[in-house]
Structure formats: C-alpha cells, structure tokens
Image 1 (spheres, rainbow, N blue to C red):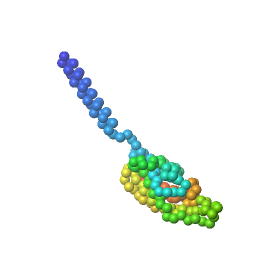
Image 2: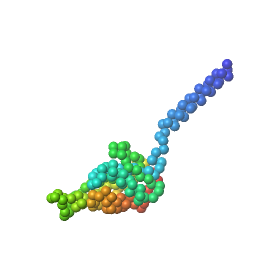
Image 3: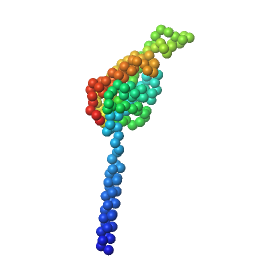
Length: 167
C-alpha cells in the first residue's frame, strides 16, 4: 500500500510538471519574422497604375531585387496589424501635369506626368530606425523606370549603405 501511494504521488507530480511545461511552451510565441530578415512592405497613397495591394507587391519585389541576403521582403496586407520588421511607404501626389496631346479633345493618359513624393520609414523589432524622403515624376506605366529608380535609391539608403543590424 505504501508503494502504491508513492507511485500515485510520483505520477501526479509528473503530470503537474508536464502540464506546467506544456502551458509555458504554448505561451511562448513561435519564431516569427522577428527572428529572421523578413521585412513587410506597407504602402499607402496613390500611385497611378497601382492599387494599394499591387503597389506593396511591386515595392516588395523591387526591394528584394535591390538588396542582398539576408533581407527578404513581402507585401503587407491592407488593414493587417503592423509587422515588427517593416518598411512603410507613404506616397503623396504633389501635382499632375498634362503634356501636349489628346484623344478626341480629352487628355491622353500617355501624355501626363505625376510628381510624387514618398516618405519611407524603417522599423526593426517594432523600433523606429530611419526615415528617407524621395521624389519622382512618373508617367503612369506600371513598370515605370523612374519609379523603379526611386525604389532602388530607397532600398540602398535603408539596407545597403546603412546596413542595419539583423533583427
């Protein structure tokens, strides 16, 4: 009878310890982008030829092409909670200029230029790192070389020239 009581007590202690360890491990969040070089790209504002989702995807792809490993970029989803590692692009239209040329009396999209400014903020581990400003004139084409050059310059300022510490 004495051995049975010790066995039950030992079994009960093992169950309690297992329960505590299981709950402690479950409370620890899984490894996320915080442990990697993944940076979420968020975009707001109007850029002709892009929806907000398309713009974030375009910026993430171009930033990935412009920076070296270990940095990886993914497009943020509109309305999603901010990622701990993120680049936030805020575009503002400074002015739209219609150049000569029209189609049946209306300005043709091929004959305009949009002067844009972008404020780009970098956050790593939810800590603000840096802001850079950029201005560009685009003609509204999705793969506009000038917009591509803007992304190139910003990516180099944030991730190549300054080389932030890995998150």
